[in-house]
Length: 97
Length: 394
Image (tube, rainbow over all chains, first blue to last red; front, side, top):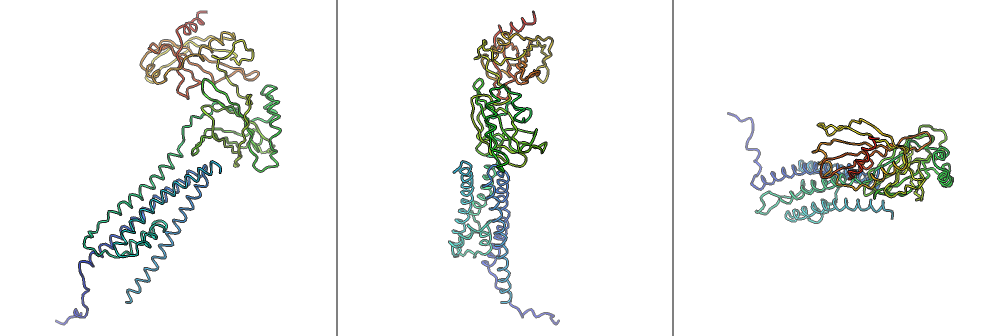
């Protein structure tokens, strides 16, 4: 029977235990990173609550807390954007290679 | 540096320390982990510690190299410390903000307040001539409201005490309050300070350039701060301590220390004594007046008031426990009415409630003047009860 696909054309990738362990660890790290994103939320919430509670009696502290939350949010958004752009470029380079 | 600025700096310093601890723990974990993975440890530790919202840490986790040593099992106990820190520190921050801001029981309470804010002329009609002259002289020296956008609220304060409890009587001049503003005064919450807040709302917008005068008294301590808000504007308060009562409020003296021969002694216009039947109900006791006697003789009024004020205070909770267990069979309600303005006889401040208990505590007075302080039980004598009974025999 004539084969419709040449199974000998491509060699299978080399696979060993270390590569499998690396893949597992990368997946684990991604899960941890996602957890950390959510772990940030209590700090945001606590700073915003302190800002609202101290708004009348300690305006300076309230202002600092709000500025801190804004800096955290903007900074983390910028960092995430820059990182994802760099990763995308790296991925494209890897694909071309 | 003002005390407010010092407090703010202390709070900010405490928050900065807590956040620095979190960054330090994250940085330490990344430093040790990066070293084991052959990555530039210090650089990554600084990135993880100082990038906002743990982004540096997240990026490190996503880009770190695999570990090569054979002893690595994939478990990272240091991460548990990091997560624990990230949960504990916000909880500490929330606990601090809640426990420090929650209404502190400073012991202050507003004891009396004027029914309305008065113009200077209305005020002078209500008080005696000497007080009116002194207050008018002070009033005329207040800054003209037209010259300052937010003039201070001048205040006169008279310090007094009653049976060991400090009391202050305040006369506040409220700027830009118009005529007959609605005024509320209450104990307010503030971090590290007990304060009183006065709020005035305009009811008329004519005559807006004048001050209006408002009287109130505070018991249980001296407030650290008095905040005045007229409409939407905050005005700082400037307090002057005086040696006379500048308010339109009356000060009931401690009759146990008063001189009965003093003609200026502030005594009630009349004292009403009601004899009551007592019935025990599921919720406590029910008092039904069955007879009433009015006493207008100054000496008799003074004797009764002196006995009440001289009575020794007893432990409230043991008295309450005893009263709930025992049956009363007799009670008297004594009401004092003061003439505070011509043609006006009313005093809701002094209502003394006399109860007889068939317990070890004996005859006991429940003085409604001190109900908020929870020390309003005092012990009197059988002779006093007999004297009250004798009023009804006559």
